[in-house]
Image 1 (cartoon, rainbow, N blue to C red):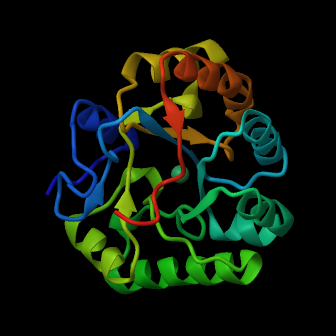
Image 2 (image 1 turned 90 degrees about the vertical axis):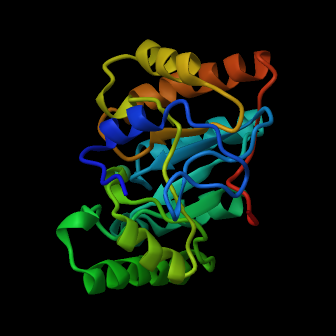
Length: 223
Ligand SMILES: [Zn+2]
């Protein structure tokens, strides 16, 4: 299968694929959910003390559900924020314990990292994550098969907001609106230094997508 070199490369490759609810491009990796005007906001690398509460406030005010791909060590560091996002009805996903890139690791290490993060999330929030997203979008076919066998659908994204390198909210808004399509899975971040621009862009993105007839959902519990 395609072994992605960088997350950005993966996101460019992914744009333009149209998949059904249970279809995958590779054997095991999901990128898009369905074809209707539902889109899926996803936030990676948190929870962060500064940005995640601000993002949760915006989502709450606008009644928008989302999915947060959290890091185990940050769940441990900010347990109240991790619990809050679950209590407020958002989906919590597994993004690894401390954002190590999988292809540098052994199969045993990968399985251990996924299970350790599962255990931390469950211990802190009372919920087990359903979905797994590899750090940087980097994953081999064998790694994906192994993680699926642990009970986790593996999901990447169709729209990279590029908020992780943005120097303004306007650039994030433009990246999302230029690439949006029905069933899109939108990659954003609540746990990187540039997340302040994500916080600024988020309400405008929600309003702009709603104006185009899109609505929002958590990643689905059944595929
Ligand atoms: Zn990440």
